[in-house]
Length: 163
Image (cartoon, rainbow, N blue to C red; front, side):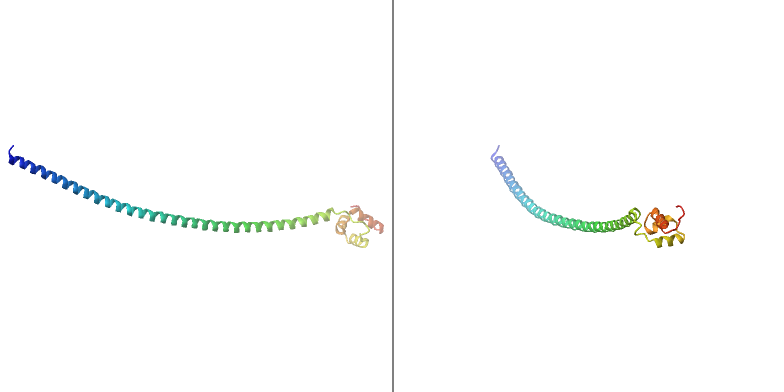
C-alpha cells in the first residue's frame, strides 16, 4: 500500500470515527431530549392524577352526602307513614274498646242478678200487664226475673196467664 492509500485510509477511518462520535453525540442529545419529554409527560400525568384523585374524593363525598340526604328523606317519610299507621291503629283500638264497653254493659244487663221484689214497682208491673205485655216482656222492662213478676202480680191479686 502506498502512502497515499494509507493516508486515504487514515482519513476515511478518521472520518468514520468522527461520524460515529457525531452520531453518538446526536443520539445522546436525542435521548436527553426524549428523557426531558418523558419527564415532562410524567409530570403532567402526575398533576392530572392528583387532580383526578381530588375530583374523585369530592365526587365520592358529594355522592355520600346525597345518599345520606336521600336516606334521611326516606326515613322521615317512613316515620310519617308509621305514625299515621299507629294513629289509625289507635283509632281502631279505641273504637274496639268502646264496642267492648258497650257489649260488656249489655251483657251485664242480661247477666245482672235479679233485683229483689222490694225494688220491683208493683204498680208498674200491673200497668204493663194490663197494657198487654207478657210476663217475659215485663221482666225485661223492669230488669227482673219472670218468676218475680208473677209473684208480684199474684201478691197484688192479679192472676197472670202462664208464661
